[in-house]
Amino acid sequence: MSEGRLTRRALIAGVGTTALAAPVLGQKLVDLGLPGGPSLRPTTPTFPGKGEMIVQRVNAPVLETPMSVFREGVITPNDRFFVRWNWPMPTSVKAGEHRVAVGGAVKQAVSLTLDEIAAAGEHVSVVAINQCAGNGRGLSQPRVTGTQWGNGAMGCAKWTGVRLKDVLAKAGVAAGATRVRFAGLDVPLVDGAPQFIKSIPMNIAMRDDVLVAWGMNDEPLSILHGFPLRIVVPGWFSTYWVKMLSTIEVLRGEDDSYYVAKTYRVPTGPVTPEDKDFPTVPITTMPPRAFITSHADGGVVAKGKPLVLEGIAMGGDAALERVDLVGDGWEVPCTLGPDEGPYAFRRWSVTLPQVSGDLADIGVRAKNVTGAVQPDQLAWNPSGYARNVIERITLRAK
Image 1: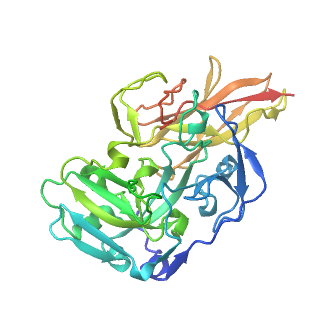
Image 2: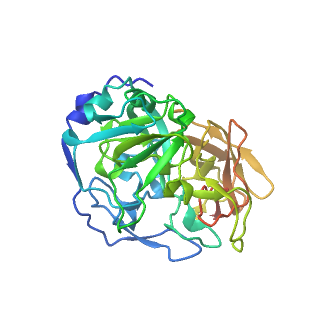
Image 3: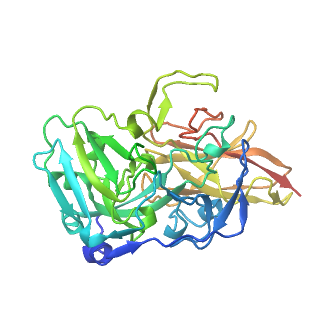
């Protein structure tokens, strides 16, 4: 994972001040095909640093990646990568003045400059998917509350930084430490609202691939993606990938902060929309998922001709093992493309020798090396989290 080409000067010191200009919305509308509510969304080709994106919210920015982007490869370009902020973030950050406070259950609290962060250990890179816990929420039936995403609240990038454990070593983790908590520069909209703070268990924090990152696809993080630093936790949902990192706190015991103890939680077992009182646990790791990207629902294909289908898949918190094209009572194994790492997207393809008629309700099913596999039926939950049901389309033969 070493990345000697990315220097401290190129990725941190040379950035200086990064600022965000006001967005300008375009007039084009896109239909996300959401079954439970309004599904038309505006797009914008002029949001700073972005190509055309689907606009879910302007302030704090929530931008969705069009599914067409995922036809192009396993790495999502920075200018088409989804954006999700819970609260408004500063529109300008001065790199030279930024500090990260490391405290809590440590031997000596420290306040680190960006140069000190960059010098804390070996510079490493990891290719990993960043996916919102609510990706696909807008497809839930019955409808649930929250941002009504299509399936574009995800992206895969090469992230570069230093290991979190090397930054923690600058303060020294004290005995009895159980979790590491992070906060950024974004602030609540109203007085008394909870700050966006998240934590991960100590054994996850000490992994070699959990990073304090400043680089995204060999470029400095943009302000929309968390300049100057963000946490990267491969295999875990993006709620833990705290942006504009300003505070690292080592905890003893459990985390009672709002975004861990009260929200971003899922039921411990099956529930129905009528259930109102049930135990929950924090959402953490991602399950496997797969998507057809070469064709859209309702597309027309040539009858009597071969058909090539293509797409992307992920193993979630473990490497992808296989992808199968599935229909009503049949399945065909797919061929996997190059492997960019266990937490990355992977291309798949399959050729059907002859299209004899309409292909109704076909989908792709991903399985990872731990045996986790996509289900045929949606495991509904009231927040629409961790959707990984097989996504199906119908192609018409002519």
